Length: 514
Image (cartoon, rainbow, N blue to C red; front, side, top):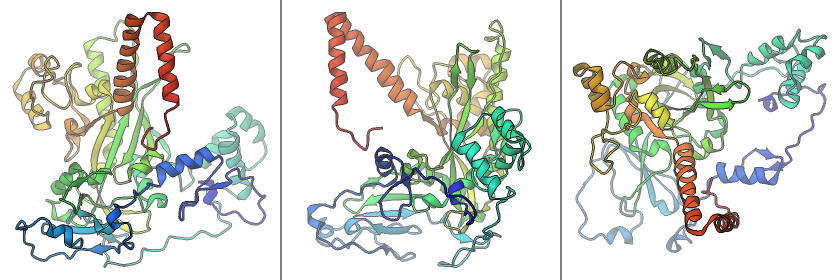
């Protein structure tokens, strides 16, 4: 944030520890260490594999756009080899779908959604003709340091808040002189900066303006070339093999766009899906069992490498309330119902400002300076099993995604859905819901308040806590260690574990390993 604000000639020269340029194309990032630069390259700049030998010598392909609106013949060819002989002959796309060929030798093509096509518009929502230039940004004068009084005030705040991270008591000692009255005035001025982070709110839980957080992500110019404006399906021209990579290439985004497109008023809009995640964390046990409940947010339109590199496409948008009571009342059914419904109601409150634009598009400025009409949707909610139980309003030990019993996981089972749950709640008693279906019938999921949202469909696993830590560390590693102790004895098992550790450390680093 501070680096992009111009400084006048009277300001003193800053020391800059970022001396190593990225060196990849037009990337402007600089780094302190070689390790940081390598990590940035691996995460931010994807490596395109070399083409097969038969097309390695071909010149770089041009960007082709397939014609739209023509009639296509879907008859299978008599000889499949004819497609190998002529690499420019591709299987025709279905009608009403924009198709774009790309990649070495045009060996991959993408079918884009026709209705939600991210058409550019002006600030009032009027669609522009193709190729129209974006409206210019309002320029500031070189001496405009708003909300700071002058350059000195900005540099002082930058030193306190970014470089030194000085405690509030020490800030007050230095701020007996102007321009700031005390640390409250300093923090309030920093919060009023019109770019960067969003102000925190409390109602009574601490949150950011979720609407403004999403706007900041959409308007970020740093990953404008790594952003999907439309749902698409990517296939290879060799046998029409489906390709999956980023979120907007999946079936879920396409199906959601189909549901939204049933309303003609949404045609031409950009579908922006909001990805959520939460994880209750215990910070300290010895000093009072301090717990925090952060809520994270991202958007599904950015590419995976952007989100993995935390390039301002992932943000903490709130700290959820954690009700406290005495141990004797912690298991009381009324208290348990209260804090579980408080969790659902808190999510509803935090997301309520997005609700109007889930049915009627709103105009938002994107990182390429173009305005577009945006229609929002709730995307995956990433959570471990304990939070999946809380989110789906089910009994612990039951599955939030299917109706299969935990005692027989091999038996085929139907998927859970909002309609099925609502039908059971209307017909069955609370006791039968709990015992027979694993449903807590007197709780209301937050997704009931938003269109096209099904909590059972949105739940996604937490790979860190469920797969890496849960399955691998807490289960497989512990099981192997117990097996070695039983088969080889305590000392021999330790020697074998040391050999395993040394072998792991000798493993070559891989970009795909995180």
